[in-house]
Image 1 (cartoon, rainbow, N blue to C red):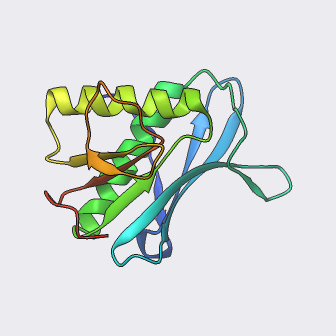
Image 2 (image 1 turned 135 degrees about the vertical axis):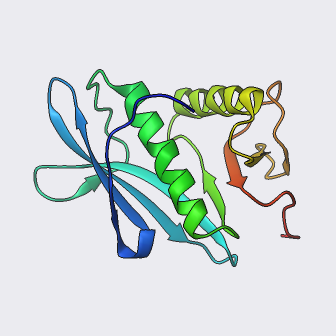
Image 3 (image 1 turned 45 degrees about the horizontal axis):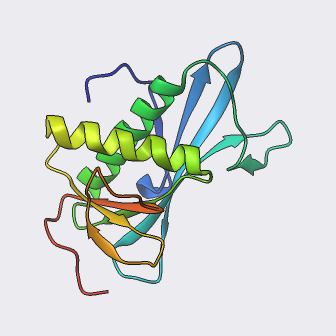
Length: 151
């Protein structure tokens, strides 16, 4: 993952991060790691801070810097996992296209195997299995841990 990324700020005990997307516009991006009901499991969310101060998780920014935003989010994820090495991070796209993009990124990361991350995919029936680039998923789990706990 040697792509250019934005500098970011660490907030709320590394459960919230901020950075600025710089394209035709400057857009404040927020990355959240929210605890779930399952111990050590966190949901990753990426949103845009709107002019009214609220955060939108469905806005399509079209700021011509998608790859840099994704690279920044990956760096933030790695930073979070370095601080919380027992954590499992869940995420999915809010559209089929974004979920497919995330699948491509995970497949690329597995091919380079640079971070020692373990990846799992969740299918439409809710089954979780080791990531397979040839299968369709609705969500993903990442961790430095090699095994998932019994869920």
